[in-house]
Amino acid sequence: MSLTRIHNLSISLDGFATGEPQSKEAPFGHAGERLHEWMFATRFWDAEGTGGIDNAFAARHDHGFGAEIMGANKFGPPGWQDDPEWTGWWGPNPPFHTPTFVLTHHPRPPVEMEGGTTFHFLDAPPAEALRIAREAAGGLDVRIGGGATVVRDFVAAGLVDHLHLVLVPIVLGRGVRVWDGLEALEDDYTVEAVSSPSGVIHLTFTRRSTA
Image (cartoon, rainbow, N blue to C red; front, side, top):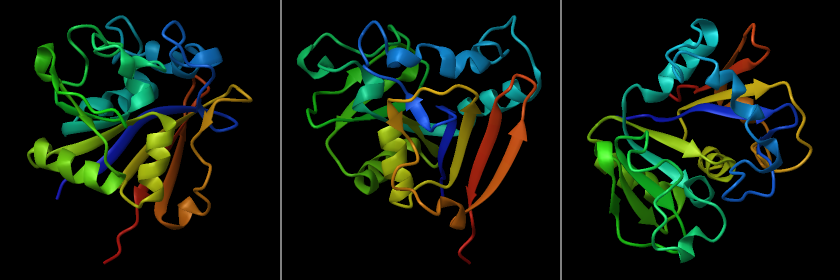
């Protein structure tokens, strides 16, 4: 059976995966690019970047996925639902290259992009969205791409098999937190932490076997 995985979700020391307010000019609000500087420095992101621990973790983002699920706020800034021309932040060839399911209360017809990405717009709870995505994934894994609210909802529903968070040594103070409502998460997962010379800490949560 395919797995449900989350990779490269960067959070601040106080648990925020994005700042505020989000806008077309500032997708991560007042956080800017600070949460993702570790990734921008890697070979995964830039051919001139570095190898090492950060690159090894970042590269796992692309391995073994047949579909993605993301929230409305990852797909676009507030109000994108009212713009029929909006097709995401990523230009004509988005980096997903799979069927990608956008959770929104304002569904619209699918949008086919270059490179194998087709955006499908669903108004569905996590379990139903995952069922649909798994059918589209063709036996491969499903990636929960964020943002923080969608990640929190899928983890809280017990639907995530593997969760990779990157703890970045900054304090944001406000935004959207990942941890709210996930008390005792560690009871259901094996947790590993790997420190990087860049200053970030890679946290991996792997669901414990119930057999």
